[in-house]
Structures are given as structure tokens and as C-alpha cells.
Image 1: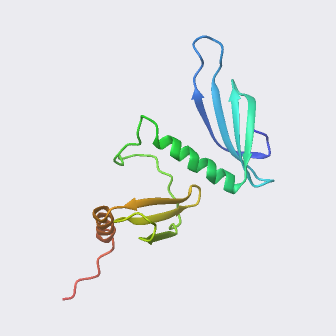
Image 2 (image 1 turned 120 degrees about the vertical axis):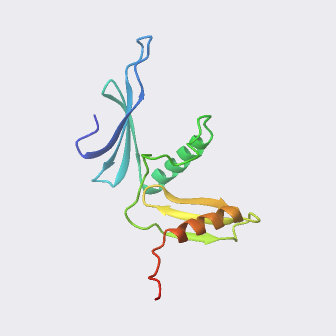
Image 3 (image 1 turned 30 degrees about the horizontal axis):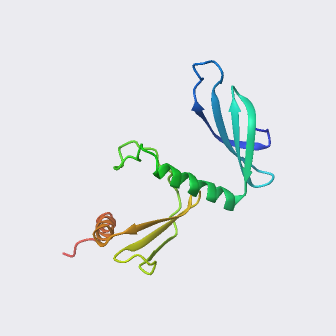
Length: 148
């Protein structure tokens, strides 16, 4: 169990019991040490702590980026379309964003969005995709009243 001075954020089973009986249920718990302002990642077997790691902000961001890069290489790909009812990491506040074409990749635009938990996430957009996103955003803007 995560220490009492940690605020548990999530507990997730990473392996149900091994059928050979050698290993129990493996879980990880992710939390916040409010005293040191660190992210705590704890690993447990059958609810008994095995190990934990702590991360300051920059290290946590690096871990998230490395996990994202590794996730992108898995055979099971992220669903290509956003399905109704999908879980999203939604921010209440509007994200900071930057757009540039001076990033060194020809014929693309870099769209960078800042998420409070994931950090800066960049997307290289070909002209057609950039135009489609711009058009979709414009379509959602409130329409001014029509002049009579």
C-alpha cells in the first residue's frame, strides 16, 4: 500500500495471477508525495509493496515521453479514430500552443500543444492535414448573427 503521506492517483493491475502459482497479482500505484512534490510510482505483488520510484517534475515528464515513444512502437496501435465514449485526458484550461514551419522538416507545419500533465506534444502536419484542422476549428466557431 502506498504510504499515508502519498495521495494515490491510480492503481492498476499489470498482470493477473501467474497460472503456475509462482507470481501473484502485480499492480502499480501512481501517486503524489505532497511533502516533496514528487510523483511516486509503486509496484506491488498481492498488495505487498515490492519497490517504488520517485520523480520530480522534469523526470516525470521524461518518463511520460519515453512511455509514449515505447507505446507508439507496440504492435497494438492506438485506435485510429476517436470512438464515442473514449477516455481522454481532458484539460479544463485552454492549452498553450505554438505553430511554426521553421522546424527543419520540409512541407510540414509543427503544431505544439501544452498539456499540464504530458508536457509539450508536437505534431508535424502536412498542408492538407493542417488545412483540414483549421477548417474543422472554424466550423465550430459561433456564427455571428445574420444582417437583415
